[in-house]
Length: 260
Image 1: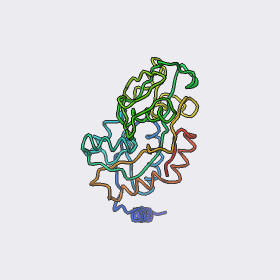
Image 2: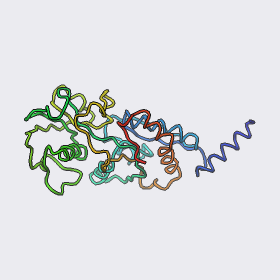
Image 3: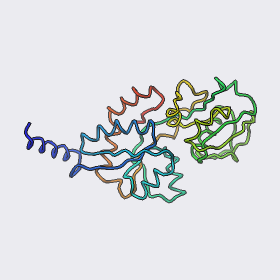
Image 4: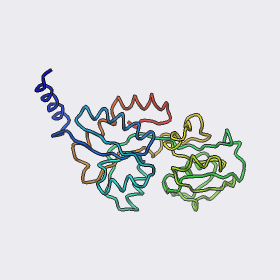
C-alpha cells in the first residue's frame, strides 16, 4: 500500500470515529487491575485514532483532583458512591460517563481460614474513607455479623453500628495500606485492586465476599465540560468492547467482573 493510501485510510478511520484528527488524552488510574484493563482498552482506542496516556496513582484522592484541575482528561479508578461523595465534599465538577468493572469487596485474614474461626473481640481493619469503610460495614451487616441503624445508605460509619455481638474492634486505615496490616490485625476488609497488588487472590483467599450485584460498579469520570466531546465516546466504546471484556475474564478469572 502506498503512503498516500495509508494516509487516506487513516483519515477515513478518524472520520468513522467522529474525531477530526488523532487525539491524545491522559487517563488516571490506580495501579493494578484498573491500569491493566485500561491498557487493553488503549490498544482498542489506538485503532480509532485515540491515544490514551495512562497515569498511575497510588491513592484514591489525587486522581479526582488532577481531573478537576485539567491535568487529566478522564479517570477510571472509583465506584459511583465514592465519586458522589467526592463531588459533594470537594465541589468537583465531574461526571461519570460509563461503568467499567466491579471488584466485590473481600474480608481477609492471615490468621484464620474461615469467618467462623474468628474469635470474639477480634480486630478488623477497614478503609478510612466514608464510602469504602462503609462498604465493609454493609458487607458485615449483610452477612449478619453486625447491625446498623436504618437508613444509613451507602456511607454508614462506626457510629451507625447498633449491634456488634462479636465485639469486633474496628480500626480505620488508609485503603492502600490495608494489605500491610494483615500481620497485625485479625481480619481486614480490603478493596480488590489493593488485594491483587499484594498477591492476595480475591476468589480463593476471602473469608467473606460481597455480593457482586451491588451498587459499587466502577466508572469512567470526566469533567462536566468535556462529557459530550467525541473522544469521550471513543474512550467508552473502546473500554466497553468485546476485546476488553474477554481480557477481563481471562486475566482475572472472576476476581474482577465486567459491568457491561
